[in-house]
Amino acid sequence: MAPSATSKQVGTATLTFGDKSADLPVLGGTLGTDCVDVRKLQSQLGIFTFDPSYGATASCESAITYIDGDEGILLYRGYPIEQLAEKSTFLEVAYLLLNGELPNQAQYKEFTTHVTMHTMLHEQIRRFWDGFRRDAHPMAMLCSVVGAMSAFYPDSIDIHDPRQREISAFRMIAKIPTITAWAHKYNAGQPFMYPRNDLSYAENFLYMFHAVPPQEYKPNPILTRAMDRILILHADHEQNASTSTVRLAGSTDANPFACIAAGIASLWGPAHGGANEAVLKMLEEIGSVKNIPAFIEQVKDKNSNVKLMGFGHRVYKNYDPRAKIMQKTCYEVLGELGIKDEPMLDLAMELEKIALNDEYFVSRKLYPNVDFYSGIILKAMGFPTKMFTPIFALARTVGWISQWKEMIEDPSNRINRPRQIYTGAPQRDYVSVDQRG
Ligand code: CMC
Image (cartoon, rainbow, N blue to C red; front, top):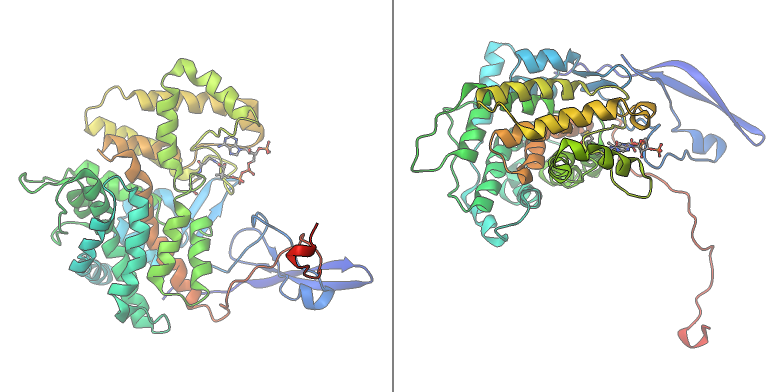
């Protein structure tokens, strides 16, 4: 079981409003910023807090992932991402995120067997693809097919039954590579490849994605390792937009497949997981190193609406630790594939160098994030640009399901329901249409 220490009161903050004041507990966790507990604020002072994009709000207690944005630290269950990316495997990380501890050999074997046993999709799900246009964006297909899983696996949607929650978790983690690979096969007009249980998680995904029936498929160990590492780096990232979406949907007791579909929809946006696709499009548009200064000027122009994609983060005010590992992996992959000169990589490196020395980016603490280099690696590995965000979704599924499970098992969980500052018309009386001026 996951360690489930709850936060502790570390102090009190006093808030005065009008002639009343309230003593609010300040809560601290194991690491990170302490938080004022405002849950009783309305009953004590008759006011709410206002934080529209949650920049100053902790929405839950969680023991899964920790980020220190100033120092550029990312921990899964306390383990630094660098160590996990170097030494672990994606399924071991999945076990860790779900259960709180790294598995022993027997637990790892059992977990791998359970995931492997669930890789096939209900055959009827195959027919879903026929309803899509050939050029449908794979994220649209992922959203729909994952949402539809609740109709195919109704035996595991009772969220109050721990066994069913566990089976749903296995189903999601096991089937998402099949769904992702099939979305690509449908786009490409190639036959769907059924999962192979003799292959590792990453190998099986690469096989279902790249293999075609007439040719023997030989997994490349360096590319398999790179794939596994990309999955580890994207596996969880505490309360980001898509994870918060999964938790918000889950707080209503909606079934896990519907919640993950909501997460996929949220991930799609270019400010979030869609950034990896947007980075490559941006690099293609810039085209050459000589065009970088003009592009940077556009980014700095407030009226242009142009962003340097793959740069900046709500939490990291330092180099995203995942970006560093991505950059290293990028060299390994290009080396293995014998790509000596990758213009996109040269362009990205030069763009990074210029941005990191420019006052606009320096003063705003904007650094490369995980998406800056991932697209270059994925492109080199033969993934079409449209597939970058689905691969992010594939990896993040384990984080979403772990966070969803943690929330359901938290006794303090209740429906998430923010309030608002109403700025509309005050109450007024209806006037019939013939009397309106
Ligand atoms: N290019 C240019 N300016 C930027 C960028 C950027 N990529 N990111 C932030 N800024 C500016 C922003 O305009 C603001 O300027 P000012 O203070 O003059 O108004 C300042 O930096 C502070 O940014 P912010 O608006 O407070 O940042 P945020 O926390 O609201 O947004 C972000 C974070 C990731 C949405 C944003 O940095 C962004 O749009 N980046 C590009 C998209 C991207 O790479 N997203 C992937 C994020 S990492 C993977 C993931 O989580 O999915």
